Length: 425
Ligand code: NAD
Image (cartoon, rainbow, N blue to C red):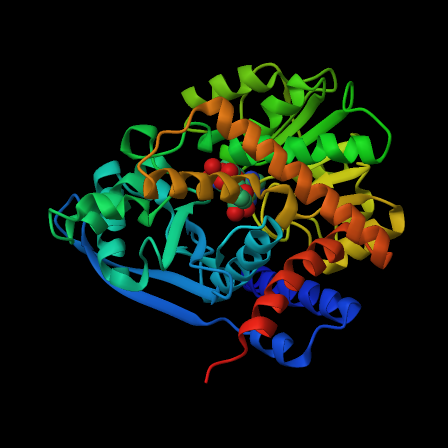
């Protein structure tokens, strides 16, 4: 418990430290620095839900809205025991930078419910989700704050949120509100390709990194932490580029095979085994505490925050860390990696494919259109390339690492908005 508490506090500390470093480097206006150091709204709701056995449980849900200078708040909902106000704040702040860097008309939000979803039946999860949506009320909305999937939430959960929100509107207006969430199933207004977008984006930044470093992804060994939405799609796309996955870690265990683990076969296995990689027969079990020290060229953390830190960064062999997860590297871990010459493709760039395609879904719903998969992937790919170039150009101009460069890009856009509009009244 004590370790868990420490971990949670440091995620907020990480995002603050990253912001301060970039703000110093770019000489950010002191008033704008003050504004961006705070979150606009922090909503905490406690709500009752009837369980399958007739008893009632009280749940706590969060939604933090960091900044809306560029548009409505946007960001995921997480269902996990570690969710709390500080976590939600850190993740909301990261969303502000991510949306700005990607050039989207959004600010940052994040939230979730503190619970272990594995302990609940599907019908309980549906009632928990619907009651949470009801409790949030008009604190979310298609032109105000638009949630999306995150850890342990998926298209089905987004469909329940959309339905609950829309059901509280007049039947004549219902259809105007489908874009209150993104990441919905395709049949309920979701976007073709949204499912794979974050993983695709991770590999697209790796392709760009390889070009930038004058190397190739072909034959490169990689390891993946987290084999959920982001991890498994990234693994499949990277394998298609010629990468060789040698180890995977998730909440059930760590598996290793120096000759390669087939990303598609492993996915099929997890789908038959409650989503876990443990026991995969074509790999051996591995000591989880040694995971990040495994010999490889590419490391993709795609699970939770603070995984690469002062206690394991020294052991890392990878030449590049592609941050599929939000906040997987602590500042302490990052300082060690910098000394070792390891490149970090920062989360706000690396995993931005998800929010970019969420924006496409939002546009599709607003305009009553149906987009095709090829168009989605092509548009996403172009946007990822543009963002990567902006970040590397900024890194060269300021002579800084990729994370600081990404922050400078993101913060500059918000700084311009504040300078043009001023601060009311
Ligand atoms: P998910 O729920 O689909 O998968 C989470 C994975 O993390 C699972 O494989 C789980 O086993 C693993 N995991 C959980 N606890 C772990 C632990 N202690 N050690 C190792 N593995 C553990 O979630 P996701 O949507 O793939 O999100 C993963 C990360 O990517 C999160 O940090 C999320 O914020 C970030 N992210 C997700 C998206 C998206 O579109 N889904 C977009 C941007 C960023």
